[in-house]
Length: 105
Image 1 (cartoon, helix red, strand yellow):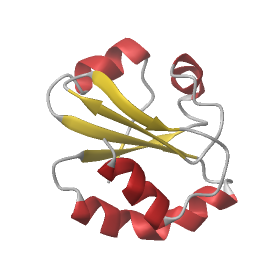
Image 2 (cartoon, one colour):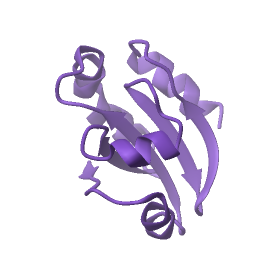
Image 3 (tube, one colour):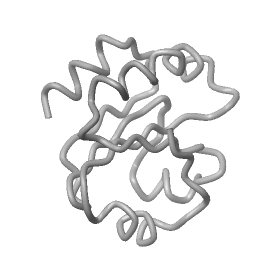
Image 4 (cartoon, helix red, strand yellow):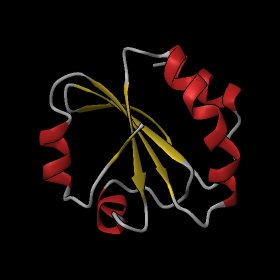
């Protein structure tokens, strides 16, 4: 999974303007993020039409605030730069919950 360097919202939108992307917001200290992280390679493999990008919330705190990501782990889906769905809250997420979110897009 690609790791997003520190960037602004405008830079992010330029980066993801073409194609389908799934942003995965997490942080190294987040135990709920650590819970879902081992499932991420399998989730990525199941949804090859999405490019998954790991966003370190602490390195991109301004971006997280701009995107209204106040809890982690969280996921935001984009298609050609337009947000098409979000699974954003502070709760622990299971592989099944993440798959249900992606399937509902």
